Image 1 (cartoon, rainbow, N blue to C red):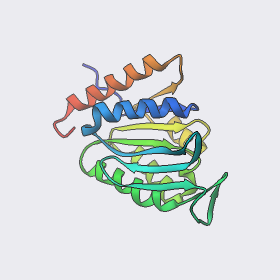
Image 2: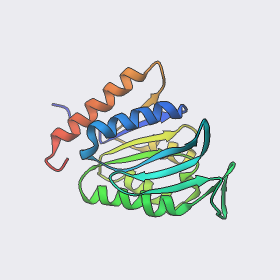
Image 3: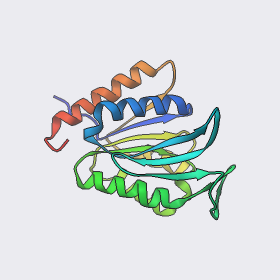
Image 4: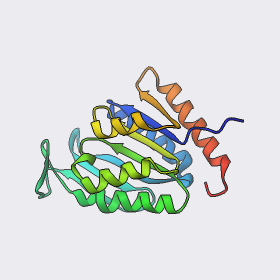
Length: 182
């Protein structure tokens, strides 16, 4: 029986599809996953910013019009501590616990923190299994994924939704069945 690839990477441009797949996988496979999710903060129909949610843990505002920060990002202020404390702590705990590392999502905001992005790349090149969502166009992460062996990359699109779900579930089923830790 062939061993599944170590890393499963989804590129996306449609945030709603990414959030839908990430939520589905966390609901079904949460006990085997560790890491973080990036969620929109919405008030009514308006996006007010983004927050980081450590799986099974705390939430931190990542970017918002309502915070004060020296780090601008488009129309928001960005709080690097959300990445450097909340997200990295969740990833480190997941790695120590032998879980699949969930990176949801890597993109331009993540690249605003050198501490986060450099450690994320180290973890991505580690022997830990990783499930990754990244916003197409995030050059440092696209470059890293192009150099990674034992990695399957899938473009997440509406027409390819069923195939993406099937690939993710099959990969996670195989990872969960391979070790008692997961």
